[in-house]
Length: 385
Image (cartoon, rainbow, N blue to C red; front, side, top):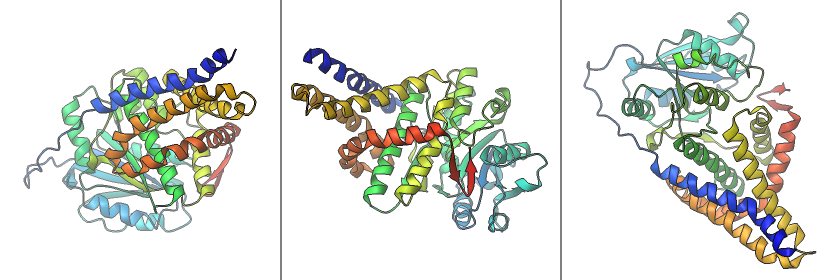
C-alpha cells in the first residue's frame, strides 16, 4: 500500500522534472542574434520600421526615464516612432509625454478624446495601432527601463529570422532592493520568463510579457487582434501570442539577447505583489491554449504533491523516502533549469532562494489562483471585474 501511495506522490514531481529538463534543452538552443554594425550617417532609412506603443495611466513620474532611454537608442531615430496613449490619467502624464524628446518622434494620444475607445490597456493599444505607421509594433510599459540597443536587438532578430516571424517575445527583469520579498518575487518572475522563452523555443509558446514584445501589424489584423478577449483587462500579450501561433505555426520567437532585456521595478510590498499576481491569475480561467493548460495543471499537481507528502508524514512516516525524493526531484529540476536563465538575467545569486520559494509556493499559488478565479481586483485606481 505504501509503495502505491509513494508512486502516486512521486508521479507529478517526476513529470515536472522531465518537463524542466526539456525546457532547459530548449533554452540552451535559443539563438542569440548578432547586432549589426551601426549605419553611417545618411545610410539609414528615412521611414519608421518600428512603432513603439506605450499605454500610460498616471505615469508622470516614470515617463521621463523611459523617454530618456528611447532618446538613447542606437537605432537611428528615423527608423522608429513612439506613440504614448494617456489612459484617462489624473496626473500630468499627457503633459510629460508631450515634452520635447529631441530627435525621437513622439506622438501623444489622449484616450478620452478617441470616440468610442473605452478604457484600459487594450483600448489604449488599439488607439495607438490605428495611428502607427511602421510595419512592426514594439510594446513596453511606461515604468520600464531600456538598454540603448533594445530596438537594434529586435532589428537584428528580424533580419536573421526571416519573413515568417510575426511575433517576438522579449525578456523582462524585476528590479528592486535586495530584500527577501524582491528576491523571491524576482526569482518567481524569472522562472516565468524562462519558461515562456523555453516553451517558444520548443515550438509550443505558453507565456510572454506585455512589457517587452513585438508583432507585425498585418498579423495582428489577420487574427482580429484582441477580438474574443477584449472584455478582459489582462491578457493583451499571451492571448494574442496564442492566436498568432494557431494561425501561423512556427511564427513566434524569443529575443535572447542581453540588450533586449527590459527592467521594471518589482512590487514594493507583499500586498502589491499579491494584487499584481491576482491580476495575472484572473486570465488563467480564460485560456483555451492546450499547451498552457497542460503546463498550468502540471505545475499545480507537482506543488500539491509536495504539500500532500509533507502533511501526510505525521500519520504515514513510511512515506518519508518518497516525499523526500519528490522534493529533491522538483528542487533539482528547478535549479537545473533556472541556472542559465538567471545567468542571462544577471541574477545567479537568486538560486539560493529556490528552496525557500519551493516551501512557500504551494500555499502562495493556491491563494493567488483562487483569488484569480474570483475575478475581481483593483488596478491603477480602477475596480476590475
